[in-house]
Structures are given as structure tokens and as C-alpha cells.
Length: 251
Ligand SMILES: O=C(O)C(=O)C[C@H](O)[C@@H](O)CO
Image 1 (cartoon, rainbow, N blue to C red):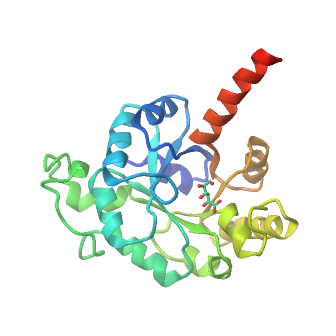
Image 2 (cartoon, rainbow, N blue to C red; image 1 turned 120 degrees about the horizontal axis):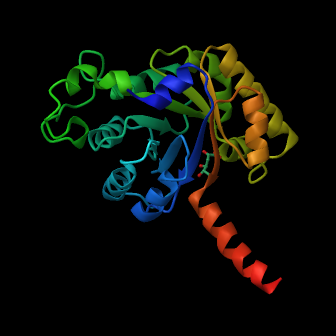
């Protein structure tokens, strides 16, 4: 049972932390911090299938859901990520129902979809030990798609209507760039677009998520109904903590 998938279906807030260090040690430390989910970034972090596997194994003993972001919504990459044991996906730059439907199909074995079958050698099936994996793997898949372009904003309702999409997640950084405010997600036009998008997602009957820019931002987004919210990154924590410690000594 995928607790994150269930919580999002029930609209219970789920707090996450981005993992961009591509390191199993820091992932294991963050896994013990109490977050509901950790995002392992294959888009903007120096991750490979091997580094992602090492991080997945490092956090396995903690009650936290590993969510992986492929660099692109490619069925081949999704197949590999599911085979090593990820169940929850955050797919960037989704802009149409057709694209969302392809992503759902990529997470399902035939006849429901197109996911390739290698259960005897995949970690996800216990290397073949789980004889029921092929039949029920789709039940635990949590598919979250990113809305972070003008086209994505325009297609929110049609994307939300796709069966198998569990949540729609706003990427403020890319959205700011798409709206002509690169590097300035706090711009009024971007903030208005984000607020409207989060409302539309919920009205369309799906869970809404966002990459929050601060704990204060996260509180405001959750007050507005977002329930899949990341509140920072491992890199940000390390940058702030390392510099803050020195500053505290120097007074
Ligand atoms: O567009 C965004 O913002 C996101 O999708 C989040 C970023 O990619 C994440 O790497 C934090 O910078």
C-alpha cells in the first residue's frame, strides 16, 4: 500500500524535502527527519540509475515515500525507475491529456499499459519473490505531474481528468520563466497564476502540490488546499546550516 497515494486521495497534507545531492548518506539522514516523502531528482541533480538505487536502498528502513523525478516523461526511463523499486513519480513539464495518458500507460503492465516486464530480475518484485507483483503493481503507483508552462496551465482541467493521475504539482521556477519572469517566482503575475492553478486543480478533483519557496509559503499553500508540498532542498539546508554555524561563531 502506498501511503502517499492514499493520503493524497484523502487530501491529507504530505510534506516533502528535495534530494539533489545524489548521495545515499545524506538521503538516509533526511529520511530520518520525519518527512512524509523525499524527492530524488533525476532532472536537475547529477543522478544516475545507480545513484538513485543507492539512495532508494539507504532510505528503505524509514517510513518515508521515495518520489523520483525523471529528467523527462519517457516510458523507458519510467520503466527503469519502477523496476529498481520506486512507486511514486513526479514527471516534469506535462502539458496535455495525451501526455498524461502516455505516462499512466508507462506505469502499467499490459493490457492496462505498456510497461515492460522483467519481474524476475527487478528489485521492485523482490527479484521475482513476489509472485503477485505483476497483477497488483499498478495499485501502488502514485503519478504526480508537473504544471510549469503556459501550455500546462491551459491544460490543467484536461490533465486532471486523466484517470491514473494522482496529483498536479506546480513548478514555480519554470513557470516564472515561462511567464517572462525568469528567476522571479515571487512576481505578482506568477503568484496569481500559481494561486489560480492550485484552485483549478482542486476544482477539477485532483490533489494539488507545489514546490514551496519557504515554510511560510508552504503554510499559505496548504491553507489554500495544496496537500503535496515540498518545503526545501538538501542543498539549501546544507548551505544555510554550514554558513549559519560560522556566522554564529563570528557573531
Ligand atoms: O520549476 C520548479 O520550480 C521546479 O520544478 C522545482 C525545481 O526544479 C527544483 O529543482 C528546485 O529548484
